[in-house]
Amino acid sequence: MNTNVLKRQHTGPKITRFLKLSAVFSAVAIGTLSIAATQMPAKPLLVLSKTDHVLEIRDANSFALAARVPVGPDPHEIEVSPDGRTAYVSNPGYGALHRIDVIDLVAGQAKPSIDTAPLMGPHGLSFVQGQLWFTAQGSKALGRYDPATGKVDWTMGTGQDTTHLLHVNTDGKRIQATNAGSGTVSLFEQRLVPPAMPPTGVMPAEAKPRLDWVQTVVPVGAGAEGFDVSPDERELWTARPDGTLVVVDITSGQAMANIDSGLQGAHRLKFTPDGQRVMVVSVKTGALMVLDAASRKPIKTMSTGRGAGIYMDASGNRAFISCTPDGFVAVIDLATLTETARLPVARPDGIAIASPQ
Image 1 (cartoon, rainbow, N blue to C red):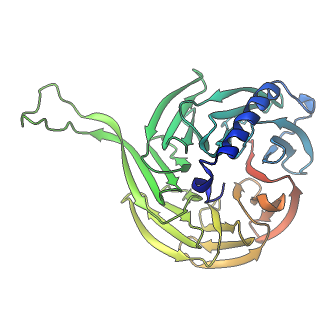
Image 2: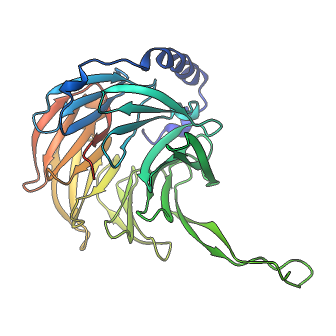
Image 3: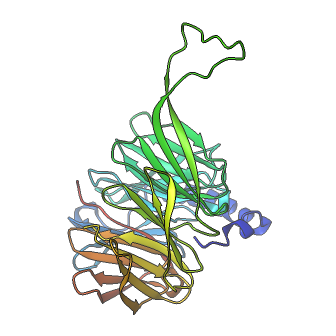
């Protein structure tokens, strides 16, 4: 999703169109199967098409198309459960929708979707500690869905505009999120908070420290939305449309460096699986830059499609770039930093590989 989201968020025709489409897709999505379940690839590559409103299921090695499963009216991000059996697809609808699609990857068909209302505009997704965490950019909030109970069991406000993407640490006790409309990053940490002293000046005997979420808001500049966290979970890098990359120290909650990449339209970035490099793509020019994470200096700049998303495939040592405006997914070999394939997909966005962890 581009950085002009706030300008479009309240345009009546856009919201009306998404609400009408939502009703149509709710009626047709459940139970639709394009290819027999026995033909599902052992290692599925999942790609969302924003034009066709489908989840494409391909073989991650041959890229052969196995199935196309209908999803909602505004598919953006995709997250796969650790067992590789279920995919979740967010539908933000410029803050007007409240739907996350659920796809059975064994059968290759849609299951009943998740209704996140009153949390509006689900976008960023992360599956950690057996639960699906998501941003609700239309509600300035985060949410958490428990697949075991089928309920949203936790919410937390950010107080920031367009809470867009998120990362949840492996222990589920730290969360990072970009707030594209406010130009900030939210750093949440769950910790013991001492009781506040009442106006009497006397602490009640029963007052005890409580476990709570504490937020630190870090200014990073206008339009910053794409981000990633280093594998050691110490640094957060985010990209601004003016080409500035901001490095945030997660422990101190401070921005520690600004890097002028020169990439106008810088939109998404990802650490390589080994944590040694950072890949940045421009959705405006089609430039792709790889930087050394330690020195923060460029290693290589190349031209590919206008990138709106990056997925790192650790087992295949590849990166998949969603070139949404250009209608294809670019495959980048991380060993040689060369483009090896292009997969035609109508306005692709979220990408994932369903491999049991």
